[in-house]
Each structure stands twice: as structure tokens, then as C-alpha cells.
Length: 80
Image (cartoon, rainbow, N blue to C red):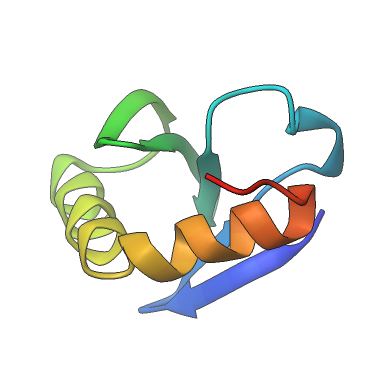
């Protein structure tokens, strides 16, 4: 479970066995969790996070989209 980014108490990571799915990250903070697609950045799943936290997660992911995608592609050895 590689951690690819930490910011504002959020931990962005992906699971090594999910390389066949489209690029995405999981984000945890406290007891809450979310899943974010990266192309485009959107939120298909979240649990235990406030709306304000979800907005902040989306802003961080949009700002860091290029880096998150690069780390995904490097880990899964994709040329996307």
C-alpha cells in the first residue's frame, strides 16, 4: 500500500493490486476514507468524512493531479 502524498492530515495512497483499474487514489483521515479517480478528478466513494473535508480532498487532488498520476504510472509501469 504505497503512500504517495500527505497533506493537511490526509494520507493519499493506492493498493498494489489495483493496477488494472483506472488511475485513482484512496484518501484517509481519522476514521474516514474516500476513493478518487484521477482522470478527471472525481469522487466515486466516501465514508466518514464531512462535506468540507471532501471539498478539501478534491482541491488537493486537483492541485496534485499531475504528481499523483505520475506516481501511479511509475508504480504500475504505465506509459499513460
